[in-house]
Image 1 (cartoon, rainbow, N blue to C red):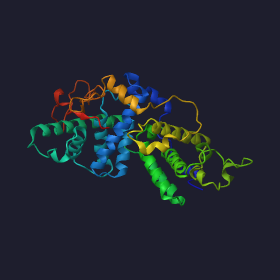
Image 2 (spheres, one colour):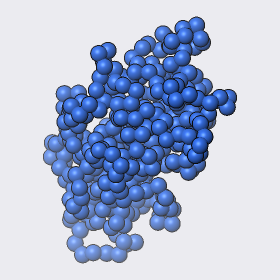
Image 3 (cartoon, helix red, strand yellow):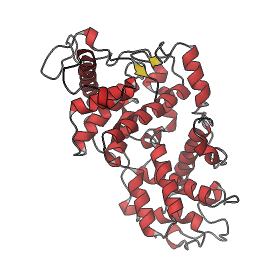
Image 4 (cartoon, rainbow, N blue to C red):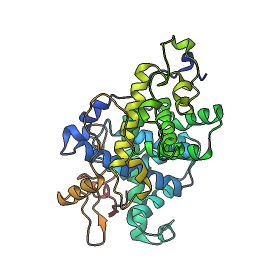
Length: 376
């Protein structure tokens, strides 16, 4: 019905087991919990998307940057590299690899505007306003230094794949209402606020997004997620070989049958769905009332695993009470709300000093950037 097994994408070296989230550098080498790290990853990707949107980048570039962001923090700790600096470096690198180039200074100016809350019109493009110009210069240096570490973290492997491409195939293969398409597209966007892109293939993620979108669009009494992703339709009688399995008249199973998933892949779809729903249930209802319907969806049955998400309102309050990410009198967070100043582990070579754009040695006093708004 859909793509044959011979056209299935090869396994990626960048896919990790869900259990790997217990042993990330942030969790293993600092006081971070899994819930705190996933909360900050979501905030970092939110900042990345805002930055990319302000720069007018295509969605594909932002998805690429978000994937690199998640890969980076499988190699380095969030306590050592501030999420906003890493997000800005991912965006800047993506503008080069995705052929939608933007000047470093433009990236730094918009980033500075997002961080400080100052209107972009008041961020100088030259040195007329010395104080603000120096902050932009320092942010440019931070982006370049972090980009060096980013390239090391992703092993100069720029290739990424998006679940959106798989969704387009699904939309083209079946007449689907615009409501389901819009829901699935939005959920796929939200999937980048979770680490799904480093846990499962784009095809599995796309299917999870599509199935969840169908479930929401079907109204007050939709088929369960378990029924939608089971190996065979609930009405099936005797088992038949996979190659002779008849098409189900149930449209709710379209994505599963289109991709002809194996049993292992179906387990992965169930796991991806459960992580997405756990992410939505962790949201603060007061700030994200639009996800209220998703918070009530019963997740599919899946193998037992550790709980990944904590309620975001509790994580945020715990962060403030422990002095991490606390705000200044001006409502801004310190240079690194995660306890470090980016980049901390530069230089990459022992005994060397970090070097700026023109081979200029960057003093330690210039490694810090201006005050940060806690907006992501």
